[in-house]
Image (tube, rainbow, N blue to C red):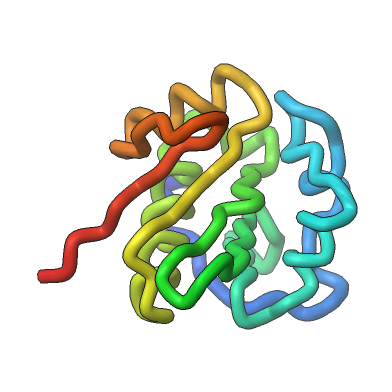
Length: 139
C-alpha cells in the first residue's frame, strides 16, 4: 500500500451525517473546540467541506462570511490518524480558495491554541488584534 498523500482525498459538501462533530467540538489540541456560534456556521453547507479518503471523512473545514469580502475560518480539523501529513495545509488552501471564489479578499482566523497559531502563521496569516488575517491579492 502506498503512503497517504493529501491529494488522495476528495472534497465534498457534507451530508448531514458526515460532519465530524466530535472533531469540531472536542477541545484543542485534539479538536477545534467550537462554541455554539461556530457550530452554527458549520451548518451552512455552502461554506463547509469534508475531506474523504477511502469513503471515510478524514478532515473538514468551515468558513463563515463576515462581510461580502471577509470570511472567517471557524474550523479546520484533521482526524488524528491523518495529521502531520500535509492534509491540514491542503485543507487550508482549499478553504482559502473557496473564500476567494465567493468574493473574499480577506480570511480571518481565531486560533484556539499556540500550535494552530503557528500553523496559520506558516500560511502567511498575519497578526490582527486577537486574530490572524490573510489578505488575498487578486491576480
